[in-house]
Length: 126
Image (cartoon, rainbow, N blue to C red; front, side, top):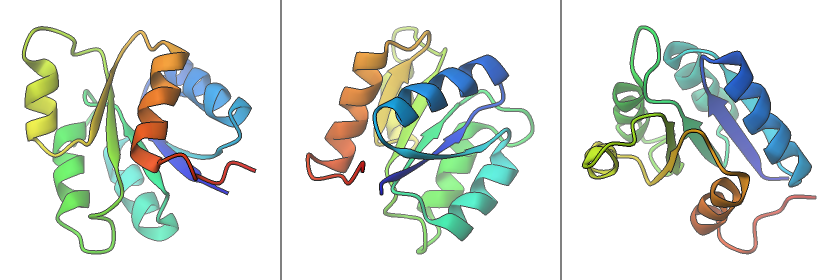
């Protein structure tokens, strides 16, 4: 089964994203801050990570850099899930190492489509 790690500090956003992903057949792990998320990513090696950018403590861009710099997690796609949706934010976030970008408030079709593009059509969701 394809596993997605959600790193999100807002309980409502975390709950919504987890619900959407579970309904689509993905296994879901979650962390409420970057430190816990990086640790969980290293332990569980999920197939994909949804990363909030504005996290307390270490922000999502710094956490992405940590993950991309670690040989164990460097190949895991990271999709930014963020309220940063002004002109230039997506380019800046991608330049920082994120493989995809979904603006909040999230639209479930866009979220699932962006995930599918990263995982490919053969992702095991059963």
